[in-house]
Length: 553
Picture 1 (tube, rainbow, N blue to C red):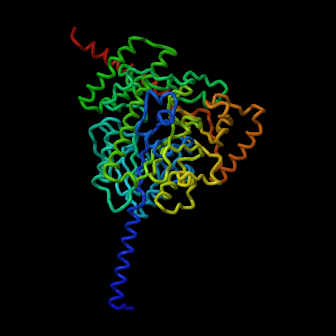
Picture 2 (spheres, rainbow, N blue to C red; picture 1 turned 90 degrees about the vertical axis):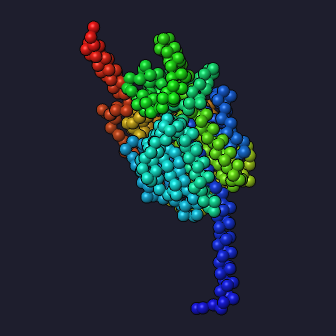
Picture 3 (spheres, rainbow, N blue to C red; picture 1 turned 120 degrees about the horizontal axis):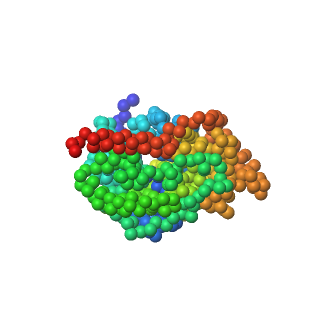
């Protein structure tokens, strides 16, 4: 059918106006800047308060909280790096997205993810920094990632065109790459999703050159449970391999070159540095290392020295992350994008900063189960809001989609946080949260467990051990007393076991298959690592003696 010329002209004009309207709506949809760190504990963000708030402030992160919402109960589904990232991408638990543990696991990039859905809806998507999911990213217009854990100094990056090395400090490089993308590769006619994913403050906590001496004149407060003896807890707490005392190495972790028996610090950090970086590093660390070696510390005093060195390095790394947040926000403000950009900060999980004598994560205990979540959404989130609902990294994908006005697929297992961000918690919001950790045997030897938390009581099932644990966080916030056998809590135990089963059915969790714990492969255990280090030291000493014999007298 052929329309008259005036009608054709009118129809064309209508289509053009409709197209312009669509383009305008696309441009008006909020941009999303998601800044994501690795192993950043809420205890190390001053907006959350605590023992470190005054001596190690995080002003740029605090500013997000001051201008937006701080979530006090953001819980992870599986407290370990890769599985947390997979949950965020898919909005699904590990048993649904297929990524259960870090070791020997590859993320299936063909599955549905929120970046793919945003891209399909007209968003430009970019990912820069740590990926840690083994496969290449999918659903992004641009990506540039660290291989595996990546390096703090002079790191390699992978793109679609291969691998290349950059000179500098990883947090600063990732920040500059993000600003370059915003400045040079961003399509101004499209809203964007930019995921800036830092390596820091992941082990082994190598600070930037400019912060090598930060906190030198500060005594870091110790947690009350630094010397926890695990009395009243179960087998899992006693058998873990994540103590500052026994597991944390003087060489790789704490930068004492003289004690680097395994050679890990030299090969994974020091030997990657430029001569100038080594010069600055040695000037900062060698006098302190010499003093430590000369002191010959043992027992509790040795643990205290290790704690101080660990915490100062950890907090030094966070100073660079806080700088990154400030730089990115300053760029948005200088370029007129701040008012239409949702800024979200989080981490893949929490971390132990000496609590229970530990570092690392994995357990359902509070310090690693709870992760930071700060959100600034101009014109939507009331500045200075604080929310204590049970939210989760399971909800991130749904939230990103809802912010963009994209329908949330029915097979995602979380819920959008947008109503909560608007100050209107839905009446049917979750009142309990399901957790499941799978990696055993593995690094730090934390037994597999699942559990349920309702905001006060936490029930854990260490099913390979056939042990249950119950904690009342109202009377025991440090989770020091397992109440599972206390008759006074029998009603709560029964109720929570029913709730655990309800959540298992809701999320379609497969039945747990009990492992045989006899003759467990302890390949990852620190005793094994330490034994290899001792063997290497003996080999080195033997070579040195042999060389001395060959030299003319």
